[in-house]
View 1: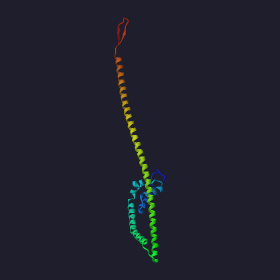
View 2: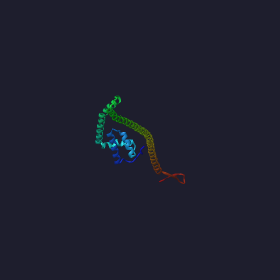
View 3: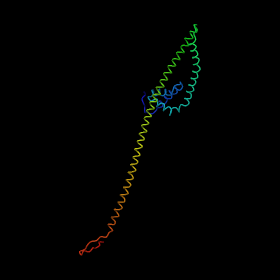
View 4: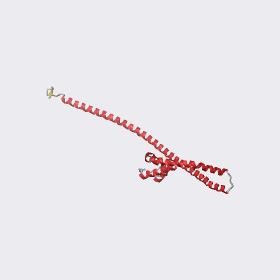
Length: 216
């Protein structure tokens, strides 16, 4: 399992990714296999390589991709032209019995083609199993990402609720603060008014005869 690197992609990493992917396209391989191979070389996951290829590197190699696809198509056409002939020869060898030495030599030569077919089938089986393994790895990574995304969504919803509560508390506190300021302002004005009335109210004192005398 390649290590997961967190550093940015370098030009060398992009070049390796492009070379390996183009080779797989040209030879009829899958991009999944290419990303897996690149990941082992540069210490990144296949998913990271695939994302980098589709988001950035692919755009720089559109012409090279078309050339690689054309080469792959040509290889496939050549295989289609040659394989039926081999199948016919193999069928003749399996169902015809010939006694001459010349025919015996032909059988030996064509047996090599049978071995080639068997090797090809075995190789294809191995490739198929490898593809399944890579698919399972990608499915596992996808499930992990989906689980992580779901967790982040829940955290986002929770944070949204907390923010709403904080905003509500802030508005309540702000309203209470404004009301308190208004009450304090009215109290200050009332205190000043009472003080003015007290100063303007006439004052009296009682003289020796018991009469009230106004004090100016």
